[in-house]
Image 1 (cartoon, rainbow, N blue to C red):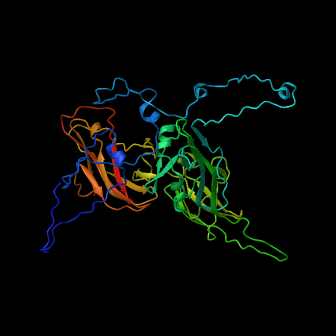
Image 2: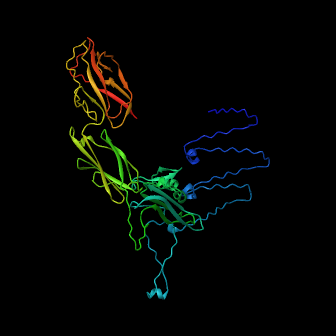
Length: 472
């Protein structure tokens, strides 16, 4: 790619370009690739170069495994043998797995007499471990900040990483490049590499903590280094209406503003916003014809941050068709005040629906045939009468770029299904297109069948129509 730049400034000798990309790290770009570094210098005395690279903390065991070959070179002709001195924090007890017994002998008379117990003092480092919070956080307001502090001794630090869940531990995420990224915490190697550090956890903004339910921890104190790492405490800063009011010989009245809801119901879709002017949390439930619909157990949802967007598709299989149905939405604020909103509607299908001239549906929401547009017996060489079809928008939202055509896969040689925008004159077309169609609006078009004299007989000829549209 060539970038060209023009300027009429005669003194300008160079130019720079800024290119914005998705966040990435050099480790992600260079993984499994060879890196070549070229250095230029005009220092004639320089004989070597030094390159410094920062990496995640690791041990030689992480990189080399359990065995390693060491090659030694020397130009000293008097040297006949080589020695390698390697210092490590190691004990034979590190190799023991499971429980074991410690046996000792003493001639201490106090111990033999039972006046004093024997004791064993053993300094050790734990294996790597992952701790998952078993229950959701109990919050009485909006979570503003997570604050973690660590205990580190004067020696090299171990590893401490965090992960967060927003769905009660079903999935886990880590915070990278100012956004949440999915993380498989069962893969401890991945958890160790990409989990959040204490510094990252403490800098997450309030808006990115909304909905957090659980926290997982990864701890690892390497057995090969004299290091130690421990979590001192984890605390949450919550803007909650608890322990904020003290009453001493006085009357206190707390005023609560009722939660409000703004809902629409169209095309068997319930949409709207539930909010509380007090900025407290809200919850709701939906009943259809007196029966629990959402949640299915009939209970209210968990407390949700306000405002909260509601969008629910009502299953038409639970509607009473052709009769009045009642949809009731009950909602509640944090203090327990309950209000409701109701919708009465006649049960019908949802989608882009076809109807004949008499107003009967030709198919249901799922494409099932309800009524056929029957042309009865057609004689070869004849063209049938024109029949009117109505396309009505029962999606609950506007659509554009509506496209109608017959399914070419079901065509029969010598038989052509023709479409027209008007009945008289009938102008046959292979397909029809229309613009914006708002909810509950409809369009009319016309269909006829033309045959030639050589058309083969088909006692059960069936034609299907395809409709496509874009949501506005």
